[in-house]
Image (cartoon, rainbow, N blue to C red; front, side):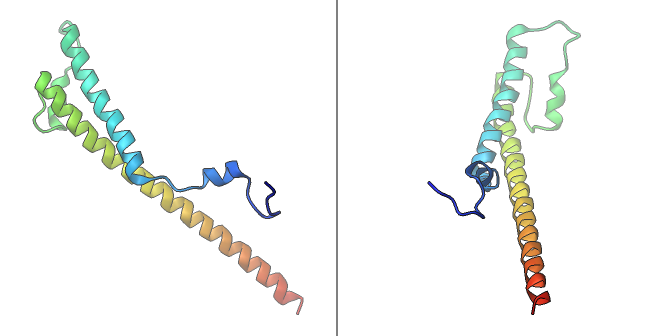
Length: 121
């Protein structure tokens, strides 16, 4: 496959593709939900001694959370919601910054090309 002389290499084109916001949100939501669930589950299974970290502070962030199996499911749900929202927003901001920088670069290139053209008239 031959590329035009001005075309970007395939690897570079792949770097500038926009992220899928819902997919990135789902991935980050699933990961953060499982981490929150796992932390609570490991804490419940190991029953650490009193100097262990106090997980009940998560109740301040996750409504309905307790250090129990029910609380582990609550942390799974809230962790998913928190992660999905953060992932969607990060993908949105990244896509916006990439689009704006590409537009700015393309506009500057077109202006410099037209300036050269007008100088030769």
